Image 1 (cartoon, helix red, strand yellow):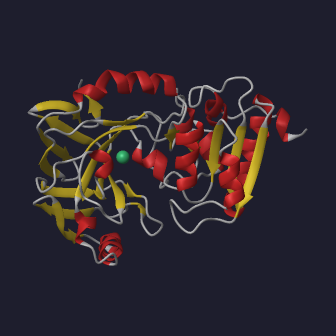
Image 2 (tube, rainbow, N blue to C red):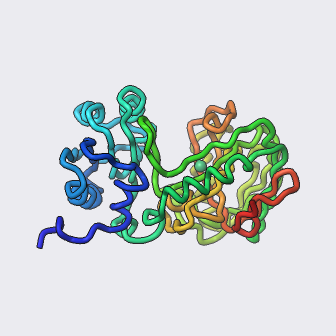
Length: 325
Ligand SMILES: [Fe+2]
């Protein structure tokens, strides 16, 4: 039997239901590269069961996140309704993606750094309509003046979030021009520059090819809004080196408090599920312009802390990894 008659994995079905709300007649483009051909082909085979107008484009893997695709692919992006990026590196920050979304209303779903199992279980199998409702229920409460983050791993950091607006990512691309990196789903706040103080103990993951799942917790001393000292084992040394190589003090800026909102995500060493894992927070460092701040930095790196407690103005928003609102 050909693959087209196999039952569609829940995570692929979701691409056409709760993630994009695919409508009959919409044109689907799948972008993949030499390293992720298996993922691209999987999506392509099943997309043909759902839609008539389906095409797949293959390129060489890009150098880094945000690198531009070849011109022919950038052109193709302008003539589709839904684009699925089954690539090694994310195209989210590429101009091609941005232009297609802004000018043609393309809906973008980034599936970078995927492995086939991610379509069978975990975050991709969640009901994103339900996640959407849950985010809408709590997001407006994720703001205030004083934020305190603690966790059983030893994290204890405070910062001001006064005047900062919550940034939501539903993990879906339903309205024209929307873009997401599913199965991540989150609500995020940007600390006010210079105000973060305390200790961060990174015990979840860091989406960097040399790091991923953290085996030996990394302790970061935070003063006046920036990481001033990094201690721990082998992975702490790697993080230190990765940051030092930028020769740019802005990479140490505490930039984001991103709370995972997809209950089925687990920390598995892949960016989207790790960052969107429920009960955990990713503390982003570096650039914070997407979170109401003014720090331009060559880096935005997320570091996941497990099972957190978040208090805003003395009230529990999350306690031991469970929402209290
Ligand atoms: Fe985030």
